[in-house]
Structures are given as C-alpha cells and as structure tokens.
Length: 232
Image 1 (cartoon, rainbow, N blue to C red):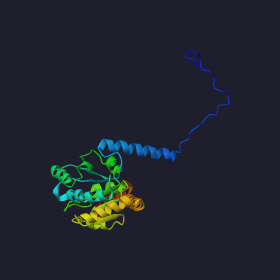
Image 2 (image 1 turned 135 degrees about the horizontal axis):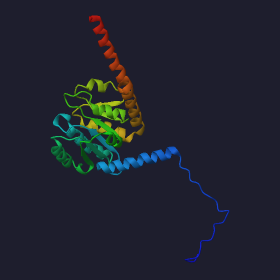
Image 3 (image 1 turned 30 degrees about the horizontal axis):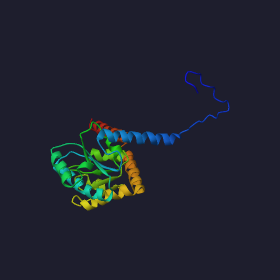
Image 4 (image 1 turned 120 degrees about the vertical axis):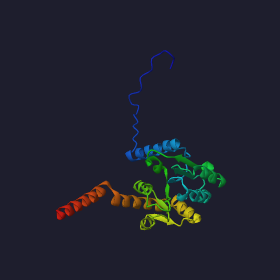
C-alpha cells in the first residue's frame, strides 16, 4: 500500500471472527477488577491473601495480639497482608508493635471508614476481636452477612453466642499460636473457608434479615397492644 492511495477493498471471503465472553467469566473479571481497585484505595498490596478486622483501636480489643499472631501467619503464608479498619488511642502503639514484629510493611491501618463493605470484601479471613465487656458486635454481623470465614477471640458478652456458631472458629485470648493456626487453615484450605463463609452468611440471613427483624418488632408491638387492651 502506497501512502495517499485508497485502501484496497477486503476480499469478500475474509472470515469474520466473533469473540464471545461467557457472562459468568465476565462477572468474575469485573469482581476481580473491583477488588484490585479497592486494594489500591485502601493501600493493600495488589496481590496475596488478606486477613482483616474491624475494631476500635483501644487496649480492651486486643488488636496487638492479632498483630503478634500475624507474624506467625506471614511465616506460613508469605505475601499475606493484614488490614485493620478502625481508629483509636492505641494506633501509635500498635504501629510500633507491628514494626517490632517485623511486619509493619504488611499491616495496613485504614482508619475509620464511612462504611466497611468494600474493606470486608477484600478480607479472605475476618478476625473478630470483642472487647472484654462487649457483645457479639455489629462488625461480626457485617462479616457474617458478607460471607467471610471468621475466627473469633473467646471473650466478651458475645462469647457464648459466638461459640454456638458452627461456622465460627473460636480461640482463647492469649493463644497466639491458636489464632495464627486457625487463620492459616482458612487461607490454605479454600474448601473449609468457603463452607464456613456460606454457613456464616446463612446464619446472618436467617437470624438478622430485615424481614425477620420487622416480624419480631411487629410481634413486640402486638404484645404491647394486647397488654394495653387487657389493662383497659
């Protein structure tokens, strides 16, 4: 072809090629792309597993124990990141703990977020850290509803409820090896992680769905109305 001359017409018999991308594959690609973008926004490494928690950074939460156990998790699963969502008076000390354990570059302190949905979507394992005087916590419910495999520390008012859930692995507060082992098992065993995640989501939907909560509120109102009628 000489510059300035019109292009020759394509042969009529030239085959036309149509590329079809299965919808399921396209959906997986979109999800993967969104995860990469979310990692970038939250400052998490672009690849590798993510262990995470959502907690106030106060002494009673025991976030320092998670960071110390994370050192063992990284030994078993190099390339793993720890995402900590939340803020508080202990943040400076916790950053020092991470540095002392040699994992500071792998620990991301995301601070307080307006909502936790995106952060939870990045977590391959969620670690629930209840305070000593805390119930089961909204963070735990959100992680269950998001379909995350969960490892919980056995303390606080919500401990009996947590232990009733077959999908949740509970460890003692001072058992750093046990915490690391439970998290590592989920990271290494995709089947176990998937089953635990599905069970956790099912429990959250069954016990805490909007429909169920509305029904329970209506039942309370009906009971109050009946009592009022009996009084009058």
